[in-house]
Length: 228
Picture 1: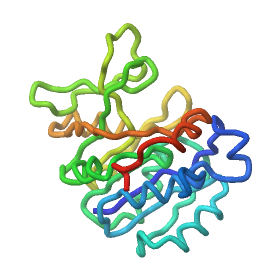
Picture 2 (picture 1 turned 90 degrees about the vertical axis):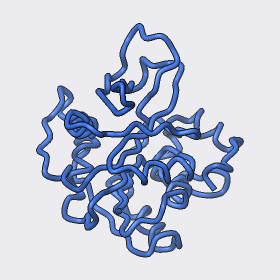
Picture 3 (picture 1 turned 90 degrees about the horizontal axis):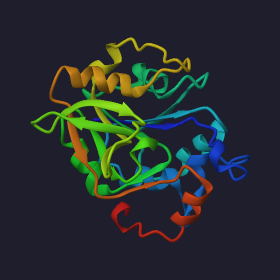
Picture 4 (picture 1 turned 120 degrees about the vertical axis):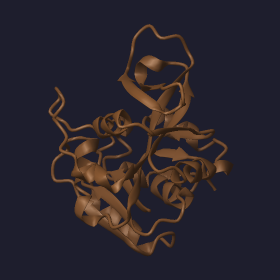
């Protein structure tokens, strides 16, 4: 299995802290977010990190980190969405399946191991404000039926997409379509594979998103034991 980390964003919701530092390198309890993510990943044959904003800083970090020896970066030329970021890695993935993670979420080591054990799947976590997330709906056998983005009038709690995926390599054979925002979404690839059946929903016990200044501040006091 190969690994992909999506780390190209500008981190606008974390300004001014991201004006000179890319979001994945912001420190959490003395370590960059990216270092926590890579350290919690299961063993992968090759790590691909998608970069753009302040890419040279992320590359400098990767050169000095000791978690992964076989790594490379892919430059996402334009911010055309998570689906475009995924597809930009097509020529750099060598294994039969790939784990894809966001560059600003901390997920438990045991949860990532569970995700790695399935042929294809998505990580989920319970949320109390479903209108802010992509909500997962399951088939009777527990596999994914569909993702509904930011639905209104759903009772809480609901299972949300938290940005962790395992795809078979054939995902790179897909041609994604642009959304109304002109971006390509990774969830389109999820939905098309789910329609074929067998796309597993893996419930995570630990999830710490770090997408806002308040969340980053809170992370400095959070219990990160599950990620270690």
